[in-house]
Figure 1 (cartoon, rainbow, N blue to C red):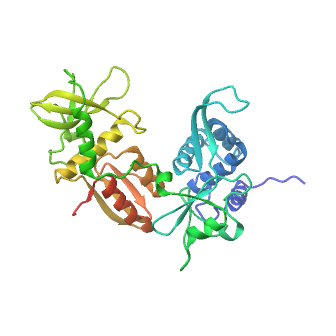
Figure 2 (tube, one colour):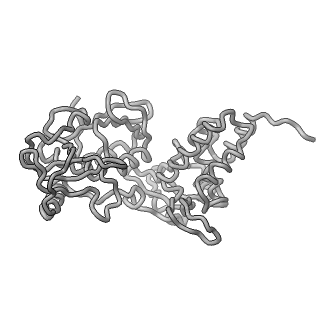
Figure 3 (cartoon, one colour):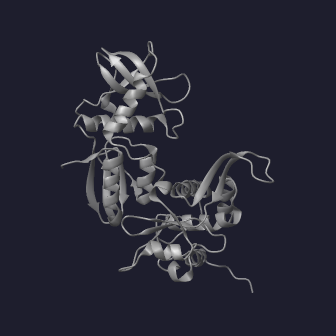
Length: 358
């Protein structure tokens, strides 16, 4: 007998199967999208991102009204899964049997990351199960905005338990892919030494200088023309095509004498990422640390930043917590209560920031 199935019943059944029935229901919920994409990736990867998008849309026809908007949500969810580490992105590779070179997505093997809070973040994809854990552990998994984690029970060594179950452990450094920790003095000294070894730069037209001595929280207002400035400064200059070029320059009375291009050769980060961190170190050494503000929220702690931060730091805060619309600042991140202390220490040690007194 054929009967018409109510879309809500289909969504409820799918949510229960994917383990997101305790979360916000609906195919547009972030937890549902992440869980459904992990399941599809387990079957289809390695594949292109477009294959996952197309398969996800095809499998939800009749459950969505705006297909284009749904595609955009899927694309953002795939980006989030790559940032989390559930999916690995390989650029310009040719896999066996494939003639087209493109960007491919590969399902990451099951793993976990032990956090200082005691929680264990669950990563990776299994082709056979929605969560790569045995049944007794699966019921303890909490899903929040696509992140899956397990909270430890009293007197439980959760990391040891997961290792005994054969789940691979990743270090926080390997997972979050941040640069090595350096003091502000060491970072600036390293850049100064590299700048000193540079050849004379000659004239650099249309140079802009990031002046850390300006007493303002506004990032844009710290940029100025060289004027009569002397010393070592973060600078940027336009190019005919593409984004501005970043560098670290020695100025005398506003005239550039030497220029070190950023990023440095072999550096995996963008020029702006390197420049922003160096400027934060310069400000810290000048006892003019850039600030962040904390405020409480029903879901945890809100970190409010007034200057841009490197991509790797932004990714970390967005993965551990989530990025939210800023209010009276440049960018904001919501961080769960158990992770707030760790992330505050990260901002202070890696980016040399200080908490605002207000």
